[in-house]
Length: 256
Length: 306
Image (cartoon, rainbow over all chains, first blue to last red; front, side):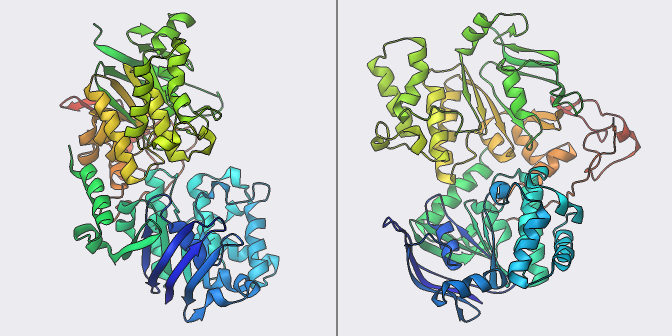
């Protein structure tokens, strides 16, 4: 179980980005964190992994299976980060180093975190690419030789390389067209099920969230204002902000 | 009074002879007062089509008419005059606005270009547009464009396009960076102007958005028109297998996304249907290119199923 307890974050410039956030995520489940730009959803995600700018003030706790992650020293956090929980970034267009082949980037991550020999790391990377539906030959390409959807698949494969218990994804389908987006969403669902991983997905798209997540937590002005099952959020939203979001979406779906 | 405001006649566009054409034999016509959608995924040719219609690039074959004038028959001066009646919102809000102006200056700039002194009611109109689009008064003069977010820039771009009261607006994915709530500000503003007589050509990959804003449209795949018809029907009763996939892939409230498409390349030097490698319905005939033909109620589809 991943648990966030009363987490608050203030950036070095004093802006309070997250206030008193509490949520839980079980293995095999998908929790979506939904909110508009500036609501604090990405900050919450990065805070869970201790990845905020230096000088940020964090209070509260984050547990990965009873391991109190944020109270660990920085070096220990770094060592277990990819194994306990790994990150799929927003905008993978820029997430890879443009001057290295995918092979080098995969090997680097696995040498660092798993102490694998390069040959073993390459084999493992090939297996991971197969798992996300790509030909292992993609390892020999540079990022610019791969389409947006394929890059996103590579990013997911890389996030899986240390067999994490939890996957944290920040807007993993933004900037992809709807068909590619659907493919990536189906891929994520399959991986979560097959590996019995917990997934926290940050998105601004409530319709997308309701079609992938078991539970949804809605953020508004730095606070989590509602947490409920997707079904509950769609049919019986309680917080005024959630009601507004649902209303503006259903207006589009129904109106002719 | 001309009936048709913009028209593409059998347009083919080839950027590089070694690769496949960006657009192949694309025909459609937009009537005065109509709101028309160009729908398709990235790389399908939507933006190229907009640029052709504005005379920014020239077709390899076929021709384009704007306000009844064939663009290959008129000179640069006349083209400029025609363009004065057009508004354009680029898909890139970072490259599409002058970075060193304030928001208000950026909105007023298209007027400054046409006449030197601004009237008071023009300045007021710019302010109303900005505030209707959710750009607060405190941001009008103090902040330069470079300090605005992508979503805010898109809204400034819309205000800048509407300030001249264009007869025809070209909008290229104008809401791609908006949240649900601010997206409505843009959609409503577009609809307002459309109801007051402005024609609109709207580019998007989102059929739901297309349906909300436009009445008619075409669906493009790899530079070919695969379906044409009322956008509400493209969403709810798609004919072409690709349109079906586009509709099924849309996330809708509380419904799982239904799509099984696997990307496979087309056989080399393929001359048949461009959707062949993805289509769940293929049969022998599909080795030939399907013609775009009328099926019912003015709907057209390029598929041998019909």
